[in-house]
Length: 451
Image (cartoon, rainbow, N blue to C red; front, side, top):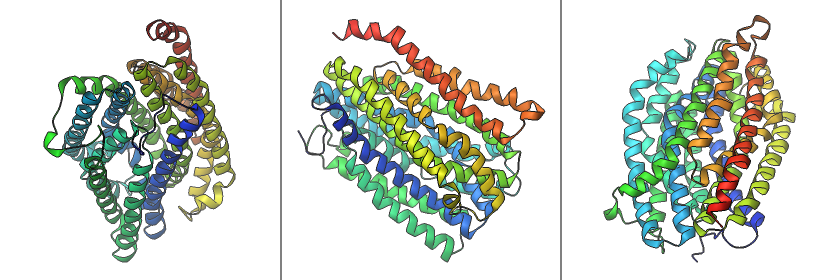
């Protein structure tokens, strides 16, 4: 087997799960560090309005990109299955289909997203003093969507064979470029949010170029030949079957978060700035847990292809406990050191106070979110992508939206505390439903079909 591959169908489960997840965790932490650099630079050198403008846009970006990010999840599952089953021809066709699909997705996103920026900002009641900068940032950001999609689909292809190390190296290089350009554009040229967004687009383009370069020089079935780029109908259907429900789930999450962001916006730019700073720090905890969930997805998909159901059963416990512990320990550590960490983002005491309110509820209980993500990915990897989507729709998103339109409307509960506590309850509700579905519906089905 190629040195950059990781066969998850053999050997110790925990060791291989960590060998896959740790580089992915580092990749995601670096990604967040570089994203945090965007927020920190504009917050320190351009003020709270720019901080709020950049920080509050993540909900909109996620809303418009999650469907296509879901397709990259479908790519990972399909390629992992072929890799585990050792179906060389199908695997190579899937690689070419995935990259071509990423290019189409990126172009389509740019075309539809830019005209929607202003209406969505208006719909979210973006504060007047934040609106112009948020609009500029988003329009430039969405110009780089093709590069973003190529990198994400390409990384999903490499993860299918357990390769998370080289995407990490790509991220390091592009991230360093992003930081350097941020400092030059914002501090030296005084370009404010325009400079931050341009730096992001340029660094994303480097990532796309490098991921394509790696795939073109692969020695195995993952080798990419640009002349062979085309869509294979059967492969597209497989990717869409897994990816669209995953993407729709992401969109629904984004819609519920948009409702919450709109509620936060109603408290003014100080609340938006504090909320943005807290979200940036929380991201470091979330991606650690989510990397374990991604490991669950690839691990399960490879073993499903190889027909090794016993290993799939074991990863249920290992992945969930690992994700929960990561969330519990890291979340509480960040909350303990919250004030000095938040000072990196803003010097405004009121913004720090708002961020502390959010972190009190989110960071201390974040392990619950890790359990939920692992449970959803386990079911998704087994080919039942629609089910976790529906459960998430009603268990997490529906709960939060219902909370905002009921409990939050009660005068004595019309507060930031009330908004943030809804997250904790939604994680518990969704996780319990997901695991109930697995144990009472899918367990017997899998046992009979995969003996």
